Structures are given as structure tokens and as C-alpha cells.
Image 1: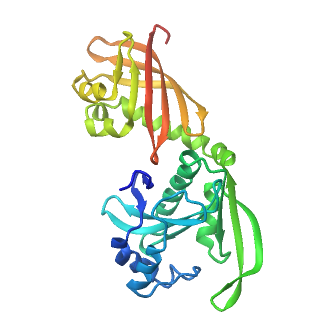
Image 2 (image 1 turned 90 degrees about the horizontal axis):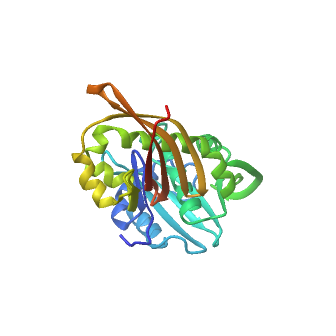
Image 3 (image 1 turned 180 degrees about the vertical axis):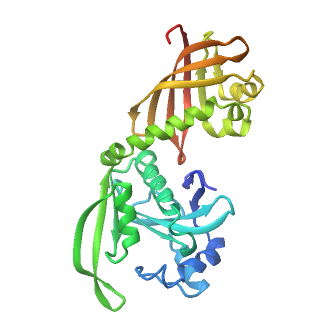
Length: 304
């Protein structure tokens, strides 16, 4: 994979560039008449898909090109859909999405689309995003409204489609609007990530720590010692197991893709029935489609 390609990982999905080796899988769901009923492109043969893929841009973020991401379900490594990204210019993008009929109604489309929008705004720093939808496509209209895009225009009989004139509805959102809309869910998401890092099963797993901590992660220990990612990943799994809980959790955006979290942690020393308190702060950065911790610091305190 090129370092410039988009690779996004969600809880259930992996999103990566569509390749010619994906043609047969793509044809399987794209040729379904129900799936393609509101789309201009209706492939019938493998050659149709090969031709479509060969005309796509190999790299993202090139003005006036289309870049196609495949939606792969992690459980089976199976292609179940795709998201097209039209890089209109350096600041604006258009998206379109298609999902296999078998996997519709299970939240996969919204899970994928939300993370793609996150990537476009937070990683590629786009200003505005639009999506064009046939108003008869109720499922797509509902999805776009549900995740926060606004219905910006309804053009009457503006597109020649299936030998007749059809309406076109445009949904859109600005980067600053998206950042405001995701704040509540973002706080819950980061709360869950911080909570994971307090769980013994996560702290004992080098694989989990590798995923949650960024490559340039730094921790300032209470003793004043500085730890890098390698030291934490190698040392934390061997540390004593201590039950921890936290409260007073708050988040503050330092930048669209950089979030500061602050909270209080209580360590429960079960044999002695003792509790130790500390103030914690972390900095999380949105990197390659997921949030990773880049900094952490803890300060012991006597406050309850």
C-alpha cells in the first residue's frame, strides 16, 4: 500500500482503496438491481467493473478525480460495499456510497460514512462536503440526515436518468458544522478509549496497546520519568494488576483532530482497602481513521 493511500479502521470495518482484484466481489453486489436502482452505473459484466476501477485515481486528494474506497467487514475480510470520493478541488469533496443488499440495515453504511467524513475533514482538512441523492432513495436520504448533513437543495427534474428526467437532492455540511455535531459522540468515544486503558485485560495486551497508542506517544510519569511507546508496551503488561475507576471526565478540542481529555482516577488497593487518587490528562489525535493517544500525564493528589 502506498503511504498516500487512505486506510481507515472502524470497530467492524476496514476501508481501503478498491483494486482490480476486488472486481468480482464488487460486481456481485453492484449488479443487484435493487442496489443499483438509483445509480447511473449498472455493471453487468466483470469487464464493466474492471473498466470502472481502471479509470479511478490511484491516489486520493487530487482535484477533479474520483477515489473509491472498498468497505470490508473485518470478521470475514469480505467486500460489502464502497464509498466514492470526488475531490472537486482543494477544499471541497463529494461522496457517494453503495452497500450490498445483504448487509443493509445493520449500521455498516453509517459506520463507514462517518469515519470517511472524519478523515476528509480532520486528516485532509477539507472545508465542505456534499452528497447528491435521488429523493426516491429513502434509505440514503435518512442516513445522511441522521449523521448530521443538512438538506441544502432539491432540484426538480435536473438529471437525465433511466430514460427520464429525475429530481436530485443535495446534502452538505461544513467542517466547522461537522466538528460541532460530533462533539457529544466524540466525548463518549474518548471516554470509552480511556476506560479501556484502565482495564487489566487491555493493559496486559501488547496488541491492544499498540493500537491505542500513537507511534510518537510520550508519558510523563508521576516520578518525573519520561516513557515512550516502546517502554509502555513492553513494561505495562508486566505491572501489578490494580482496579481503577475514573470520574469528572472532560474533553477540549485543541484542533479539529486533536483532543485533550482530563479526569480523576481512583486506584483501589483491594488487600489493604486503600485508595489512591490522581489527576490525569491525555492528548488524543485522529490518525489514519482512528483516535490514538499521543501524550499522557498523571499527578498524584489527596483530593477525593
